Image 1: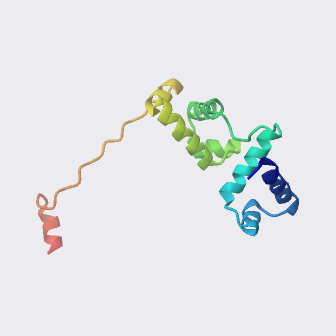
Image 2: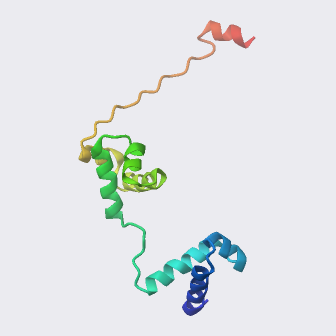
Image 3: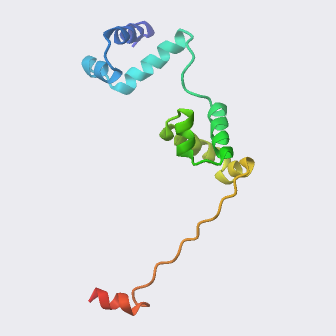
Length: 131
């Protein structure tokens, strides 16, 4: 499909007053395809993409870590969706390593030690309960 064609569809979507999901169902196109057309149209028109760059969300993750507050509380105070923040943090941790990020922020992490579960044969009380 040519750029002019999907630009016309995007413009019609805007004027319709429908949500993107409703409009995509009406014209028989997947919502992901419609989102792609909207993003391409915005790019051609010189409108900045609303998504943040890696540097922008890395700075947000670092600021949250340095605050010392739980991430969920911090996000509520800043007006950031917690699930969005978690996605950014996941990308930063994958790229730079969680330990490195926490060290840079001055966060000391207490390692969690997992307790081994008792074996059934080693615990006679559990053996009695199984009978």
